[in-house]
Image (cartoon, rainbow, N blue to C red; front, side, top):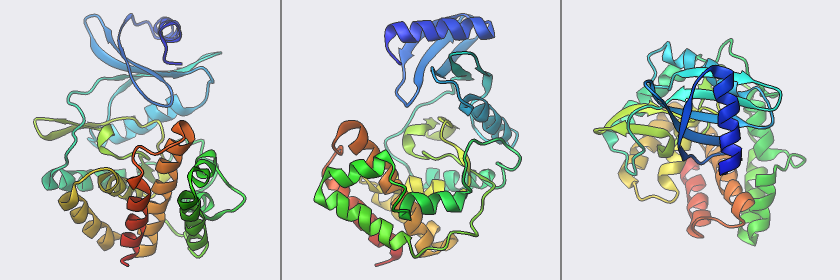
Length: 293
């Protein structure tokens, strides 16, 4: 998908479709084909595509336009389309870059920013089949709904299997029927998708996995990211205090457990291992902390 010939062919198809001349700069990581490219006299752009046409490029264009109308620092999508063999979008390259550290002052800015997600999904198209609460409960508790990620984490080790089954057991007690359903949820609200310039937030990128739901879930994703594999104790503690003010412990646990299954399961599925064996213990501790025990 992201190799030279494939990328060159994709860029030529996209360039012809939207009337732009790209010069390839570098490949970008992700689930889809992606490059950072330049257009002479116009600047840099991020181009993403898939050879299996689906709705997500248009959905990304819609949600980023909605957020930008609220003065949200989301990238401007200049083209999004589905052709016979390819779906793509082209968005502006925002200034700045990811940061390895998050100051408490920056955290406060992100908490305020997530409030712009409130109700922003109302009226937008989404390919998600289930309402937010039903989807979370199904992902966590339904024994008949074992995603490849969940299966991979359970197969990773006896400890991984025990963690999956404990999440499934506890989630079966939850009632998630009356959660917000019209907020925008980014879905991967971590430092890797946040751009900073001179210490100030300059953009939030990678909206490919967005969906309607409960905006608070994005802050739990950020908390998970700060706790697993990093040593940002002060910032993660401040965020945990905020989360406990805005949601019940059981809901905080549910969103944290969803991150555990998604993230650890992704590494187990894609690579057959976790980046660090300590992630399992850190995830167990995270879930206990969410419940306040």
